[in-house]
Image (cartoon, rainbow, N blue to C red; front, side):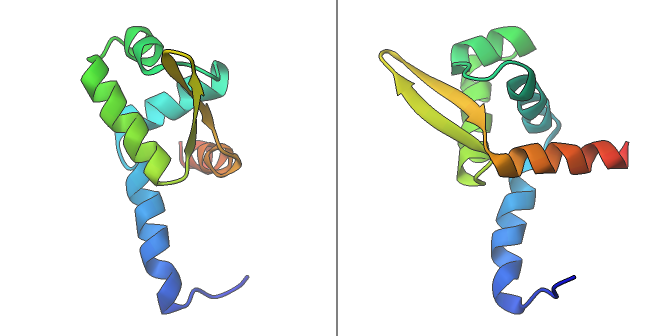
Amino acid sequence: MASLDKKSYHPLERLVRGFANHRRIEILVLLEKVPELSVIEIAEKLRINMKTASEHTRRLAIAGLVLKRSDNAHVRHKLTERAAIILKFLRTLE
């Protein structure tokens, strides 16, 4: 296993902070099951405020866990490969 150097701590922290919230984990699980959802659809399915869903998807995108794709009037969201690995890891902790 490769050792971590000091330069890699900050990107790792950004990644961990990206999914260190129960709502964001919930969004990741939802997008794993139903990819390409808009913020409105995410908010409806999780029964949360649209503004809340938007902020969480923004943070997931910053962490590199969600990709955003423009689809006319909506922005669609899907998991990155890294997010799939994170979900697999989180399931080992259950």
